[in-house]
Image (cartoon, rainbow, N blue to C red):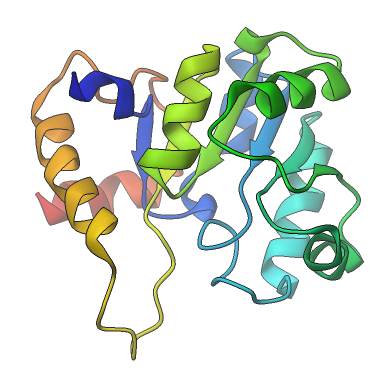
Length: 186
């Protein structure tokens, strides 16, 4: 039952992923959530995120933002980013995920979805058969309350980390430094 919430990989942040490795594994497109995946909820893009998208595009990967935010928020976010987007996506319903794949001109197998919420981002991608990567949500140091869903996600992640069959289904997609940090945390 918990498997439907399991991502294909779990990483610390979008900066922990080696996008060239994803390309070499046959992926041709990356679909991103925005809030708490790329930036803290409601924040504008940062120079680091802008540069990340340039690097991703230089590897040959296409990108698309899939978000439940409105268009005003998305346009503010992509001010310095050249990417497609779908706003008011009604995630986790599959229709928007399938529309994203169509817009990108790729297959489900050539696409990876990256988001921070199991109950919205990951389950939606899983329902569509799109490989998914869960990133640890962005939380400011002064934020102490994380919400009930995040506690349930921690519970599910406990089982996920102990099930080798589902963990790291995408293989080595990590930047070397991140692998070393992950091993230190165990």
